[in-house]
Image (tube, rainbow, N blue to C red; front, side):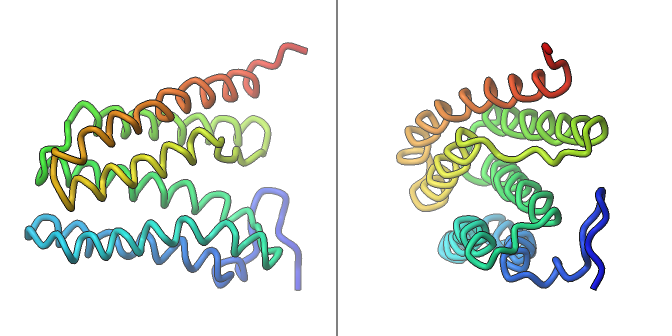
Length: 185
């Protein structure tokens, strides 16, 4: 079998269990969003819970099986952003999740994706998630599940807590981008 090119990935990476978990996360999104729009909170909670569990599992599975791959490094953060941002938009439409939070999440994630593409274009390097980004994902996951289960009463306080790692992630991702694009040798 041939090795992946410097800029690409090997097709077999599509069948790595960790990458299958990541792709399953994206495929569950339409069902969860449909459930929220139909007011079926239980189905939305279960589907989103399973989808978010795949996020907790894909990285450890990849490391355990020694299958950390360029494809996974690209798919996982995109899947995370799709999950969080799509859920935020749907919750803003259906459960009074604040639009300011949704706009902030989508804006941050677009900036991270664009910044990552610029870094890759200049350095052929795939940027990885920072611990503050992972903490943000966990905190937002909890807040969003609470919005689905209990609405604003439990969801809004959890969202405010999630804004702490979110704010930290903004600083860390901007600093990382700046250092990679404008090194101070």
